[in-house]
Length: 415
Ligand code: HAM
Image: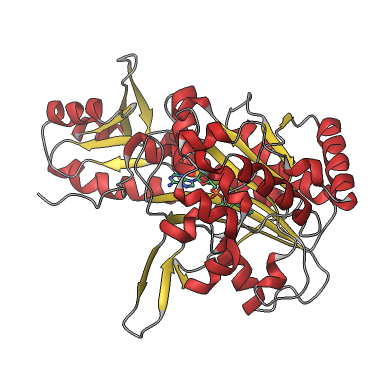
């Protein structure tokens, strides 16, 4: 029997209902803030990720699904969506004016990672990116939207881990200090880290090898080397978040696994899905647009791991909010013909009704209703047709009553 490819999974049932509920809530919440959806292709040119996520990142080094297509192009199944969104904004010249551009996306991403709980090779992200504003107020607006969205989903206890990773001006001093620290204990670091220290010292901090993590104890912190502008930006952002009641903790060790961040970087970890699992992350990336060939436009954004968020919601809240349709069961030839017309008028009126079309006996249809979680059954037979009613059975209580056909749509919609 054929099976899904390792790391790729089918979504259905209770889990998919959480995905849908989260997506619906996201759309409503983000549109309220003036964000508009963007959809970019799954395939992008390799260069898009090499120049943004970074040559030395784990994502580009070992996690990309990349291949040469039939036309000889080296393409990648996107491992994240920020680079593609920036590529699209530049390509369509959407950043030529000083107007802010607020965008969100929902879609699958691909990383060839080792499988674990909450870690897949095809996973989903919901993300938001805002272009054109460099102020800490812009960071705060985006974080408030994110926080309120998570609260709307019923997640009350989450707190952002926040740091500033500075700018290229503040990096050389940090890198010198970090290289000196590394040199003193280089024998304790793995081969990959020896490569990383040459290419991009920050990436040593991402190493997942336990001995490397141990050797990192007491390392110089990037936040100790901030330039004045980054320092001021960070202080103002923290002030705004406190004012707005958005909880955060400062984490001077936080650096992200992607190269494009400047100033603000943040994550939310959740213990509900395994010790080290981030449910979301993001930050400011003021240099990326220009780096990908666009104008000098600052930006801020984040992405949520939808698979992980759905897992947290399911653990904390059980079933996603969901109302099953009523089941309309016709009994006898005459009702079978009439039931289709009735269902059609109910659908047109916006009621949610599933039609039993198997022509089975009532008992069998009721078993299906029970098994599939249907709450309301509508029975239509000759007696009902003659009386202009339908018999309604409420599955939870077993109660039965007659509703006039004329009021049926209204009744169903208020259930
Ligand atoms: P990221 O931290 O690489 O950031 O990914 C964001 C989130 O995607 C993670 O926190 C995690 O929840 C989820 N995620 C990543 N890999 C997997 C996986 N293999 N399986 C399941 N979930 C996963 C970015 O992608 C940036 N583009 C975020 C951003 C947007 N920064 C600025 N704008």
